Image 1 (tube, chains in turn brown, blue):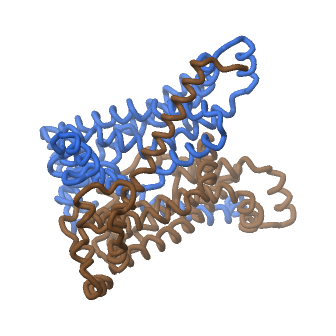
Image 2: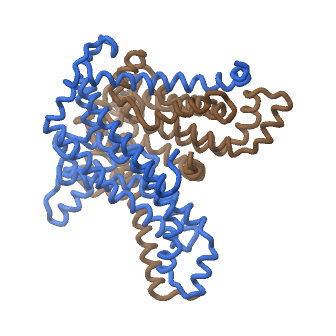
Image 3: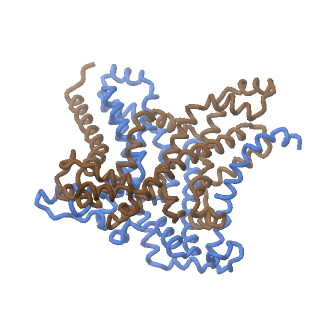
Length: 299
Length: 296
């Protein structure tokens, strides 16, 4: 089938437009990386677009030497791991239980879950409840409220109900109790679904800044994203310079410190938070896409 | 009783979820009564005195109606640009015949979805800041005056719409691209035999093929219409752009958590919860009428 010249032209236009889209997505990261690897005072003169003009690692030294940032990284990693594992476990247990269609009160329990997807008490009553439970200013405020996800439960339920029932029945014939059915049949068969939902939950924890900003005031408990949020509106670099291992070393070593600006430090900090995602993304991308498609089946 | 005992494992397994829902969803729902009470920290939601509709005084506050207007405005803008964009992008990606390039475009366009709105705010700051942001460097080098994009009431909405598109347009193509792949290839063969060009094929095969998906996405996006994205707006809001940036969620946050007007902030929250509930229920009705079945 020969293509007309008009169609070839259209093809070319689309190719170029999509290339532009890709550049729009990727360029900001190139730009921020270039600024973060350039001495701040030099970058402030403008003209750094693609690669650093006065290369330096001092911005990254300062960011990585800051104790609050180091600690916030630890909090982010901890909450991502604990939050993802507990979230998947609680939600999967519930989905598995509700996959037994004969269970008494099943409809009532499903309705209890469904209602929470339609209506909520809103932020303030939620906050008051966190306060009453003494969760404000604790690590568990990141974990407990999001440990059960109604949306993920319906995705899991749909997935489990799609499994061949004969498999479960034959296991029950052999005397397997539900926990055994769950761990030796359901979980091995659910691996792709669990991987996808686990990754979504993990990304949610990694990117959440809200809980750290409003439910926690102790700087020792904030995650990286909340630190970034505080730094976003900072007027000077004291936030990053205070309690810093690297500042003294840098000051002794050279005159580098004077060349560090608020912008260069900000760019280094945001790159430090973005680089892990940029690194794992190419390997995990296919799981994410699978996850969207599993979730799109009506729950 | 024996039936319940027979399912004792199932009840044990669902227990953690029920407890969490009770604590973090149902107790806060009961907490809505704060909207009708004079609540202060130190009181409980149960023993604070009733005040009737006193907390709803904000309904006569012009600030509140400005916030409502901002919310609706941003919601509509985001919908008008954000809804068709992924459809167009998916159709474009589908036209790419080189498989490797196609996968590359998909991978790159999904990427921003995985960054937080805070990172997006940093990107905007680095590109748009007044002294030596990239865009202002460009404007100055072309002989113009630098523009204070980040603190401007005119530029706030375009900034929200553009950064929203940047972050989510690629990701939102996934469902459409999946729908396109499930279209029967024989339809295209037949169309080619008939002499239909690419444009005609898109119009008569691809687009009708993804129409059911479009209608589902449309229905599903309705309920979240008024949730305009606190996550996105809050990091970009400042005193200079607040007159256009302040939306219901940021208003609740400020008056409730920062200024301590728990009662009236809860009342605003109740109003917005009720509106989104109405949106869900009416969409469900519409969906039932059109598709023959509801969302649940």
